[in-house]
Length: 194
Image 1 (tube, rainbow, N blue to C red):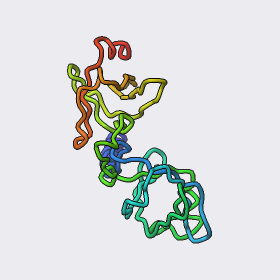
Image 2: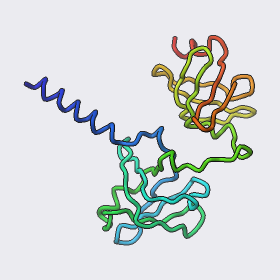
Image 3: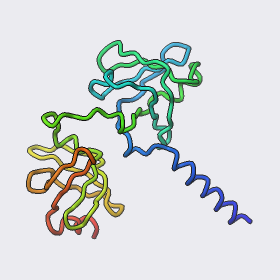
Image 4: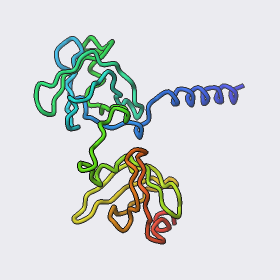
């Protein structure tokens, strides 16, 4: 009997998780700094350029590793890197306080497309890396900048794999499908997987 109820709980959790947005389907726009006033207004630190150009009707807030959707009632941009927002059903300081110090995301569908001349290798974060020999490696989760070189981070077979982003490695970029074709040096993946 206990085994059956555990299975049911596991199935319910899987069903719930299907409805939550995943981090890789979103882009970070900033984080909630604190509450403002007594009516649930939140102060958002904005680290995404030209956020005011996006029509925002809903946001996702990272609560314990899950992206929870909230509908936006109003949003104002009083100064650079700052936004004040009211969320639907968050109308008291008590309801707003637990959201402080949380990261805020928007769906990738809302991300403005860059013109070709504005696109840089740093914009490959969130793209799927596909190796010519090994196939799909995974989504580029981070891009680190080192002197003279950018390094992509990908989780491949449960291991973090790093590889340089340069003309020798990158064989093609599809900005519509968010994919980058790479030809990793022979043996590079083996270093991480052994």
